Amino acid sequence: MSDQSERNPGFLVIVSGPSGVGKSTLVNRLLPRIGAELSISKTTRSLRPGDVDGQHYHFVSVESFQDSVAEDDFLEHAAVHGNHYGTPRRFVTEHLAAGRCVVLEIDVNGAAQVKQLMPEAFGIFILAPDEQTLLDRLRSRAQDDEDVIRRRFNQAKEEIHAAQTSNVYAGFVTNDDLDRALEELVGLVEAERARRVAERSQAAGAGS
Image 1: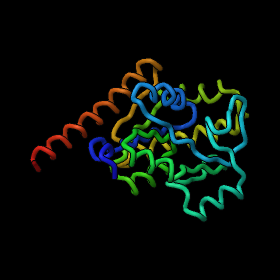
Image 2: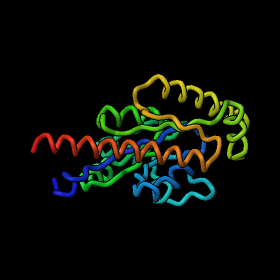
Image 3: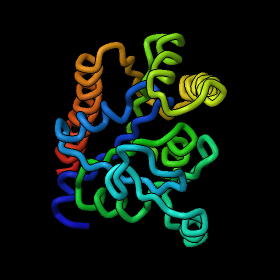
């Protein structure tokens, strides 16, 4: 381990939330505020309008994804809405070893896998203000028909319940206003990072 990573060990942040809560927008704004890097997931889903391969996701075939699973290349992987998503292990472990902050934008199942492997990961879950707002946001994206929207809505409610009854998430942020939610998100991350720095300093002082 380098001297840098001993002085400043990496900080892993997990951000989750159901479709339609605005988590991707929040994460994109969070990254420069906390000096973090986003782990780009691999997925088997098709590109959507506006998607950029290698920027939003690494888009791969089912066969390629299965090869990565077989080779244990993923820190976590899960099926979501009929598609597969996985977090490349190497990117995360190398950046954490170098003392950097890494953000994972993953679902509740993937977050549980990561938390089991890395208990020090700091999880935050993004919520919509209420169920009607969530349903309206899913409809406003105009990406799916009503049956798919209803299925996503029901899955979202299940995700929220799973998150609230798990020990994965240390904080919950309601995205009722983007700027306000961003400030709350930044505040949670920075407070936890400061707490860990103080804890390490105290431990170092006690050991000297």
